[in-house]
Length: 327
Image (cartoon, rainbow, N blue to C red; front, side, top):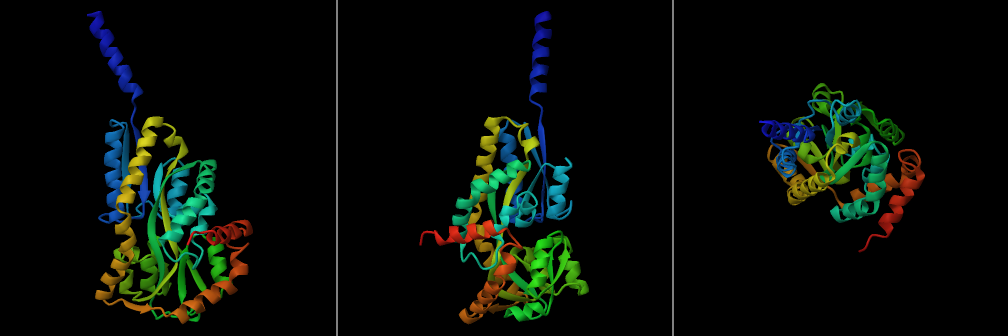
């Protein structure tokens, strides 16, 4: 009898030592999108790989707020992780703004090169601020959507344009460039367009399609203005509660799932544009001379970007890294 009691006690102690880690992860990705599907699949595989010790709960569609709200709530301990873009990542480490510079990247080869060169620096900055970067993820190329045609910079300057709320430096940069920025949460873009509060929004086509923004902002300038990169991040305190061997497997799973959908995501922007065209989106395909006009404008803007929008050292690092990119 004593032997049976001893075995039962041992089993109970083992169960207590294998306490579950519940990870509440937020995302702007709407339900039903490929991004949301990846997070659900990742959670299922994490649970299996950790023998049920790690449970992922996904909160999609911005139901807890914008990306800045997500980071704030993680710091308060209300949430533990997030799938965020450049805007959310900037709240943890401003170095990620190297990916948001206008007209720096022509293709994903350029993006991969920059990630490879800046990865260690960005991860280290994240850790110093209490977060772990699990893996990078693509979001897409930023395009200008508007209620009136935009072909040249002066056309965009005439319109009230969405900028991310809380991004003070970004708003100031646009103002100094002669534009009319209106800070809003990303969840308020559609109401802003409906009420006339804004007349343009620079965002990725997949978001514009999923939120039906093109029903009002029905003009698109087909120019890769900038990049919206993303990553999966988790609070270091939560991450450190997970066994090291599980951490390694979880990172591997996350990377594998995201890599498996890479082509779908990267091609998704063009597919989204084509789909919106079928429903009335008017797309202006840029000429080389028009692109040159935008690049000339960005060059004239350099003094405000370098040292204003991002630190001089970081701006110069970007230029130096891109100059070394293998051809």
